[in-house]
Length: 114
Length: 116
Image 1 (spheres, helix red, strand yellow):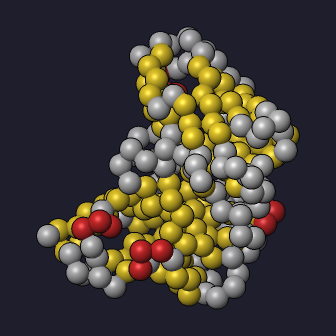
Image 2: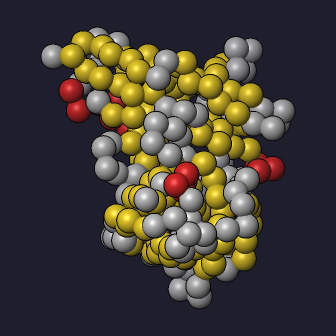
């Protein structure tokens, strides 16, 4: 069985500060890992994905994430937060054997302080 | 190009009624997935269809059903609605079922279902 745990349902940072959103996964097979962002009243947009290539993955809007197998983690970072980054962020896991579905975490709401 | 479109955007139903939600995938996408997102939680997988066949089913009761049409659009049906079915229902399309080989999910904006 696969699962993801997002640590912290709400994270607040100042504009210009480092953004760090934490995600740990559980998977008995090599995972595919994703970060999605959801703005109010919208669907989910893919930020980045890990599919067993480079462990450091760069995504859109300046976000990146690093796959650490030893720590079963896939944390999302951005060096400098912008007000427009305020949204809900979801970590998700899938695998080649269960490619028909993605398991999402419960989400982390990111707030940006001026 | 148009993204994934869902209709209606909002819907209010009474307990015991049934509902049909519709989804049109991105042109060229043959796979459609449905997710339920309850307020404050992450999306939960309901179904995936590819080439009009069911390819995956989540842990939902038989009151939930879906189908995919020859033009790859899809419907999600829910019978005997319960208060707990109130949620945002998201449709996502992809070129093919796999998630890890360059075929990511593209989500619509969802249908907000309220059951009273």
